[in-house]
Image (cartoon, rainbow over all chains, first blue to last red; front, top):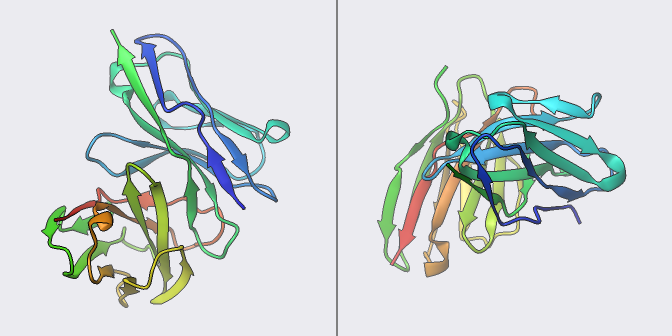
Length: 114
Length: 115
């Protein structure tokens, strides 16, 4: 069965430091992968997506993610974190059923310290 | 272009009642999906509608149902509410070339509390 694992429930990073959020997926074919961010009381905002091609994808707000098939990973990175990046981050994989259903990880809460 | 809108934003219901939530997708989007978000289970897919037809369904009981109208607006209904139905219900729409791997754009959600 398809699944997404985000091993870190909560991460604290100092403002200005680099960030890497981990995501591992289980999928039988070429996956469609996404990262979303959710601020308190808000819906989800798409940060970036991977469908095929270049394994390093750029997103909004200075985020990037690298697809590694051999490790079944799609880790999110940012070189310098800002206080406004504090939020919950979700990795998702496109379901192999018809349609656009997404399977989400449990999320990683990012706190930013000054 | 306006984003996905959901009404109402907050709702309090009593066990045994039913509730209807509404979602208006981004203009031009024909696919609408619904998700339930709870602290314990996280984000779970409920169902998807495309051109007024249910295209995909998650693993939820029949008390959860939905429909889509010709203008792509969607409603979901939960009958015989249980305490465990308390959650944030998120609606998402996708661009016209809907299929595997197409990104979804989410609304702000409806916070349902069942007492």
